[in-house]
Length: 326
Image (tube, rainbow, N blue to C red; front, side, top):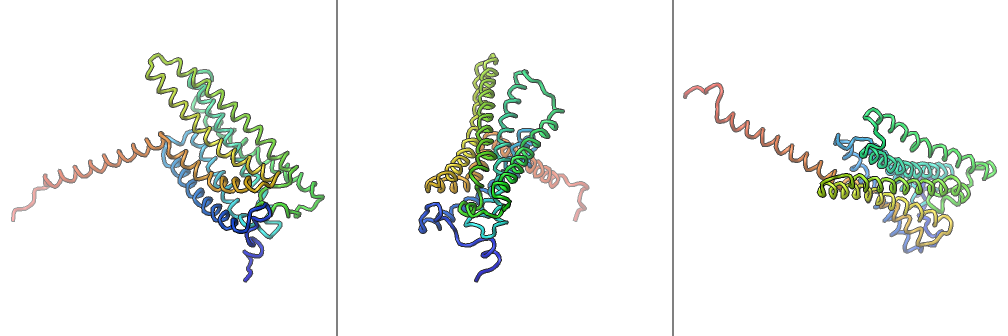
């Protein structure tokens, strides 16, 4: 029996438009829903982890928390549109929301790589910055990462409005892609071109950071310190490379899907998009720094517990005051 949700929001899954066979639509939709659910849980866990430890609430940790929040919203918005949304206004609103939150993810990645480059410059005293600049730096990153995509979203809305000759509710093509991709021209100007530029800047920041990391390690006199610093810098850079590779791989598979409607690209995009959240959450929470913080916290709790038990046992041995004789 048709209700408000099935009639206005969701109908039956509409995967066959892009060439997916009817026998595969159930498996693909199940993978998207389960993968997105795992990603949402993993992103919440990662966000809580970086909120609990004060050592992780630095500028880079705060930027990473904003990235996790943007990823969470993009995953949540996309899983709402799985199966297609029947209402045109809701479908278009969801498409613009996905457009905005995906751009924020790429901008926060750019902020992360730029902050990594700045931190490596501070380590070699090329660009000395005091602790007072942390708040100003985060404010600048927030304006660029949350405000920049907002400007692109406004441009996409205006272009879409005039491209549709004043009728913004002609969104039949959006329903074929779970209310995600806008028109090709709008997507090219306000999504594809900015994403390519952001990717180039990210790779440029990582390249400059790698050069500085090698230069910093070369300044160390002791070979052990040199190898340890070089290994830590390489792990830090590779962490960013993994995150960028996952996010940009999903992004470009979606762009290929929107322009070519290839079956394999559509499947890769849905599977990758649903699993990117849990993958990134595992990468940022299962590294050496976070594991060492967890271990240190457990050791402190164990020492405190042993201290309390010892004090309690000593109190039992030394009665104060002395009990009355029976």
